[in-house]
Picture 1 (cartoon, rainbow, N blue to C red):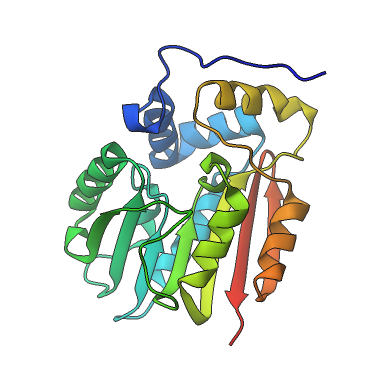
Picture 2: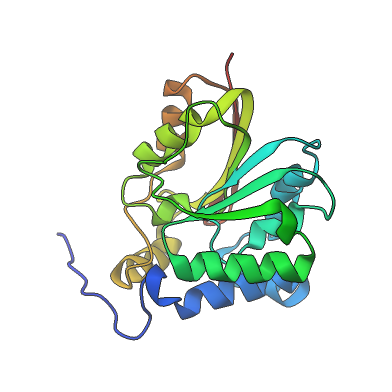
Length: 226
C-alpha cells in the first residue's frame, strides 16, 4: 500500500531556508553535541564527514573544486586560507548560496569561493572542468539522483575524484520515518540505495568505487577513468 504524504507546513523547502538546514549546519560545526545528535538520530559518525571534507584541503594550488549542493557551506571546513584553489560553490537556491558566502567570509576563504546558481541535473559547466567534485548530504535531495551522478561525473576531468555522502534508502526500516518526513516537507527527493549508487558510478566509467555506510548515511568516493 502506498501512503501519500502532503507537504508539512512551516518547515519550508530549500528556497525557504528551512529550519533543518540551520540545524544541520549547527550540528556539523559543533562536533561534540552535533556528533551526539548524529549518533542518536541517524546512528552515524560525524567524524566521517570531517574526514571526507578534508580531501578538499589536500588539493594543490591551481586545482578546481565543485561543491554541489553547497547548502550552508559545511564543506568549506576542508578549504584552507591561501590554498590557491578555485572553489565553485553551486546550489539551486540563492538562500543557500548567500549562507555559503557568509560561511566563506567567516573562515577567511572567500577569495577562493565563487558562488553559482546551478541545477545539478543540467550543469552549465563544460566537460572535464574540475579536479574534485564534492556533494555532501545532497544526492538524496535531488529529484533525479541518477542524472545528478551523470552530470557530476561529466564535469570531472580524467583522474578527477567525485566524493560525497547521501541518506540511503536501504539503511533500514528504523530510518524510514526520517525519509518519509523529509519527503513530505519537500526536503528530500526519491533518493537511492547503496547498490544503485555504486551501479550508477560504475556505469559512468568510474574506478575505485568505495561506499562506506554509517547509519543512515553512505559516504562514496570514486575516480574518473582516463
